[in-house]
Picture 1 (cartoon, rainbow, N blue to C red):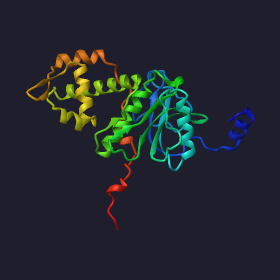
Picture 2 (tube, rainbow, N blue to C red; picture 1 turned 120 degrees about the horizontal axis):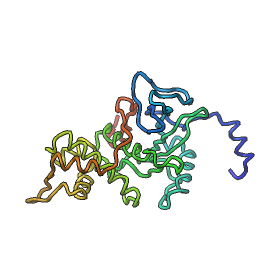
Picture 3 (tube, rainbow, N blue to C red; picture 1 turned 60 degrees about the horizontal axis):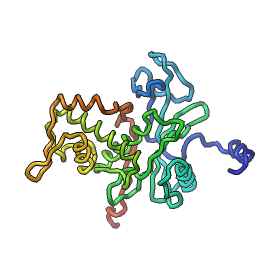
Picture 4 (cartoon, rainbow, N blue to C red; picture 1 turned 90 degrees about the vertical axis):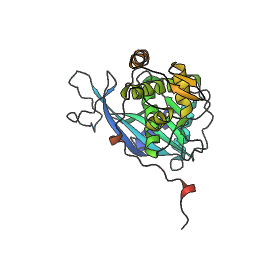
Length: 271
C-alpha cells in the first residue's frame, strides 16, 4: 500500500485476525526461556493476554496455520514478496498454486502475528519437505527456525515419507539443517545405544540417508568399510558431541498436530 490512509482504511474493514487457512497446531510456551509448556495444569491459552507462569515468566501462545496457495493465491504471493525482502535468493513469488504455506504465529490482543513460515510443494517428485523458510528479523534467535524445521519433518512422518529440503541450500540453510540433523541423530543414537543402521535412522527420523551420512561424517561418527557405511560410536563420544551441539529449544507434540496429508491425484483410482 502506497499511502498510510489506504492502510488505515484496510485495517478498519478487514476483520481477519489470523492467516486464511486451517490451524493445525497450537502450544503454549514460556516467553522468556522459549521452552514449550505443555503442562496440562496450565492448559492452552485461548486469549492473547499474557499470564504469569509459576517460574515468573509470561506465557505465549504459538499457532501454525496451513494455507493453500491455490485457495489463497493473493495471500501466498504477498507472503513470498515479503520473504523476498529478506532472502536474496528468493525467486518464486507469482506461481504459488502448487505450494502449501505453514505459517507460525504468536497470539496477542490484536490476533495472530506472523513470526515466520516455510513452504513446501504439494506433490514433490523428489520428496522435498521444505522449499523456502523464513523467520522475520524481530523474531530471530528465539528458536523459531528450528521449530519450523522440526515441523517439516513431523509432517513427513505423518505422510510416511523420507524428507529433505529443496536444493540448493543457502549457507545459512546448510548450517541450520546440519545443526538440526546432528542433534536429532545424536539423540536417537544415545537412546538406542548406537546400535542402529543408516536405514534404521532414516525410518525413525524421516531424514534422507544422504543427509544422515553427510552429517555423521562431519561429526566423525561413521566410517566406510568393505563397501558399506558403519556407524562407529560410543556413549562417551555421543555425550561429548551433545555438549558441543546446540540444544533443541522446541519439541513438537505429535498428538497436538491436527493434520492430514493431501491425497496424490496420480495415485487415485479411476471411477
